[in-house]
Image (tube, rainbow, N blue to C red; front, side, top):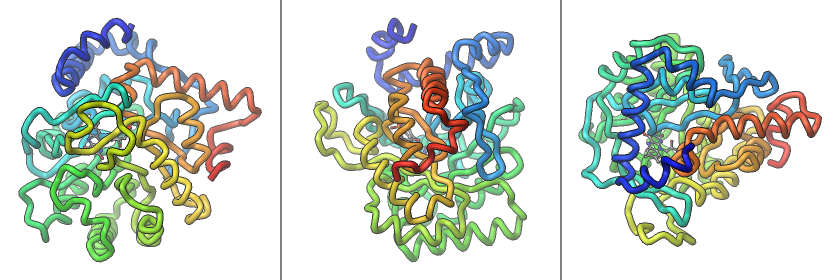
Length: 354
Ligand SMILES: Cc1cc2nc3c(=O)[nH]c(=O)nc-3n(C[C@H](O)[C@H](O)[C@H](O)COP(=O)(O)O)c2cc1C
C-alpha cells in the first residue's frame, strides 16, 4: 500500500508530506472506532519480544524515535501503529516556531534525511493538554529540549521545567542535549556543562521523588573517548542512554542536497552509532540500559543493534522511506529470528557481539 502512496508523498516538500501524515493520524484519532482496524494492520504481538526495562514493560523493542510528533498531537493514533513505545517531542517550555522553512530534506540516494527543525513545538502546556486527552496502554516517552531564546546560564532550568510539568504523565523522559539545530545545545557534552546539568537533574529527582526513568540522548558526532569520559556521570544520574542522535558529518553521501546544514539521519548513521553502542556496552559491562537509534531499516539492522548492546531501538527515517508497515515487519522477523535460533527472549541476544 505504501508503495502506491510514496511517489505521491515524495512529490511534496518533506515537511509538507509529514504534515499530511499527521493530519491523517489526527483523523484516525478523531474516530476511535478506526483504531482497532489500524492496529490489525500494524501490530504484531509475541511474548518473545516482551522486556521489562527500568521497571517499564515494553511489548516489543521497536520504538518510535523523537521528532515525529513534536507537540503530542497524535499519540493515540500512534499507539495503534505497532511500536513498543513512542517518544513524543522535543518539547520546550515555551512554544516556538523553529527555524525558517524549508528545513527538512530527503536524500533519496542515501536513504537519509537532513533536518534543521530547531525544536518547533507548541510548548509544554499545550503539549500536556494534548497528551491528557487520552489514556495509553504502551510506554509514552517525552523528549525534552531548550528554548532558543533562553539565556545561556538558565538552560538547565528549561529541562527541569518540562520534566516537572510532565512528571505524572509520561513513562520515561529523554533529556536531549544532542540536537545540532539549537545553538550551543551540544555544549552540554563538555565536562563542566555536563556535570552542572547532572547536578540539576539529580537535585530535581531527589526533591520531587521522581521514579520516572530519565534517559540522556547524545550526539552521533561524539568519539568513543569522549563518550567514555561522560559515562561515569551518565550512569550515576540517568537510567539509560540513547545512542545516538543525528550527525553533522557528510562523508560518503551521493545526494545533491547533502550540502544542506542540519542533522543527518537514516542509513549513513548506522555504523557510527553501532560503534558508540558497543563502546558504551563494554565500558558499563552490560549493566546499563542502552537504547539504539540511527539508520535502522531491516531486521538485520535491529539484530545487529541489539547484539551490539542496545536493549531497545528507535526508528524514524526508515518510516519515511519504507512506510508504517515497517514496524510489524521488523517485529515479526525479529520473533522469527529468535525462535529459529533457539533464543527464548530478546534479552538473550543483547550485547552478544559487543
Ligand atoms: C525531522 C526530524 C526531527 C527530529 N527531531 C528530534 C527531536 O526533537 N529530538 C530528538 O532527540 N531527536 C530528533 N530527531 C532524531 C531522531 O529521533 C532519531 O534519533 C534520528 O533521526 C536517528 O534515527 P533514524 O536514522 O531512524 O531517523 C529528529 C529526526 C528527524 C528526521
